[in-house]
Length: 201
Image (tube, rainbow, N blue to C red; front, side, top):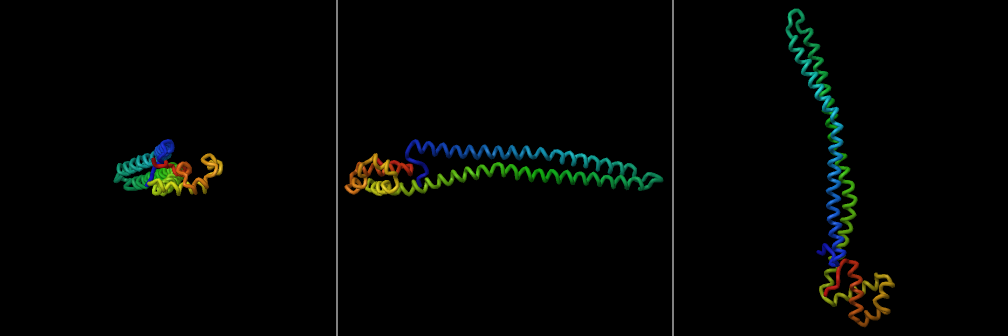
């Protein structure tokens, strides 16, 4: 499997692109965490509500306990205080619900913020790298010996623009039929360059 071009300039660009995609992923993961953490600050009112509800419940329960079994009043004063303590519990539940909703939203926003750019750019990178690897690996199998250059010379005459072919020879097809080694090598080099490969020495 050919992962990188044998042409130094193109190989350098591929290595830089691979490093660039790693930096891209890292940056967007950091941005996703930042969005997550920023969104979590919206849960602060919920935390205050839980704290206030807990404090109110404890005070009302404590007041109910302190007036419980007083002479004359019996439980008539303690019972309403205990009932009021239940309101504090409702505040706590509401605060916890708000915190839970904010935490779910923070996770969703953080993941979405990180994943969408990574998938878009990463998908394009993966498509281009995969296409190069397939093409270069297939070409590499044919260039292990000089006679294989004939195939790439033929492909060059079929695929390359006429203006590029004319730079190599006035009659590239004739030179190919005559098995002119210099023309065949030049044509093959032109075609192999498209796959990121060099003619073997």
